[in-house]
Image (tube, rainbow, N blue to C red; front, side, top):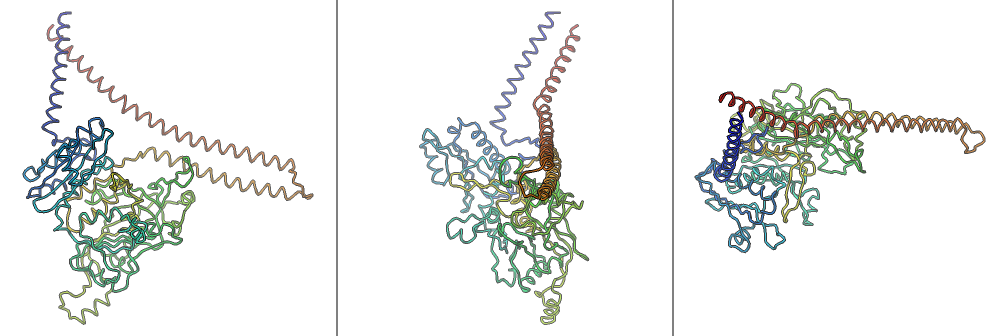
Length: 626
């Protein structure tokens, strides 16, 4: 029996050794020959090529040359940088596998003082100087069969989540001959940044990131302030916080939309981007056009949402200085349309001081919401968002209506002109058969959004400087949202999934819920404390007035009243500490439970399963020999 068990033990050891060798061999072979084959098990497919990328790569019928310069030798002492460099290489190989006939990929290791390093420098690639005097390169040069050339000077790790986007943007910029025309009407300082034209004259202009991204995919042309018509070759009309327009200008937009022109309209009851220090709400509107399109935007109203409120630093230090600001909304994917191709893959958006949209009475168009609030929202007068509002005051005044408001929506269907008298007069003048004359009705296809601050960099992107290169690290999907809208409404859907990849934001919903409940209780007790303080001060003042001799000596009754107040103050502070301690305990308990499940429980279950299987197989073999 002992010899039998020894034989089984030897066979098990041999099987384990063989399994280890097979595993190592498969790993080496897979790393060498099957890098482009990827199995993505993430819940949102974060590491898979999007359909838009595959479609774009498959569309190339002429050679595209990609030269990836990566200093593997210099990167070896830096494991994180080496792993990221390999990640870039793997993605480039996946690109090549989609169209191996026309995409030619070269992986080049520019060793110090080599010809390859000279080539990298000549191409304009930038490197990181190392302590030994060498330079580490990790950049890409792309060219097509004509004259198109583009480079990525250096792949910054901060943009790892947007690697696929950056690579496709690079390829898309090789050929600009077929770019669609986007005409922009705005008063926002998009091309200069917060400093406006003065910043440009001082050499300090920083254009909005979204504005720069639009140039990567469209022929962007600003509309002159005195325009009277929309050029016929306009593929997309983008109106963002427009100035006050004349009737002729409104009529030009009216006719462009009714004749099938595609438009993106961004209005705002209070634009913080336009003037952050404004003493009055900076609003924008389009006169009678919204009503004609079947949309209402309540004038002078901004929406607050307790559930989607962003956490903001209101001055000072400590946790009490960070508060929920109900006018700045961090909109998660649960409030973005999952059925629309534009928003279906976007993880989050940041809006600020936004208005709301509702169907107009008697509307003949249909509203298809893209972005909405939660039910824990209500409307405030827009002047409450001016200056430096008190977040606690806004929360105390919050009385949710239970209604989910529309922030952005598609508008489709039959619409009538906002200027029927002008159309009728023009038809009489030109004749009923005039082919190019104004129209009274038409099927429209536009998008209306009740916020313009989503364009402002400070609300959605973090800017960093790396090797003299401005690196934009998105904190929300605002850029993806605008680009998706422009791309789709102009007739293309090739890059929707790619641009929608955006930021993989995974908030701790349960932790946020616990925190909000505790803070709501904290605000109530704080307000009660303030009321108690005022009442006690009034009582003390009344007692002091009773001193007929005018002396400053307090009576025993006054001293007792003060002592009672002090005791109440201490009790209230103790209660507040208990609330915060309870919040911390609930969050810590939840964190400990999750840590145990992820770190200990799952591995234990796997080990237990393996042991059970080994014992079962060993017993089965033993019974067979017996």
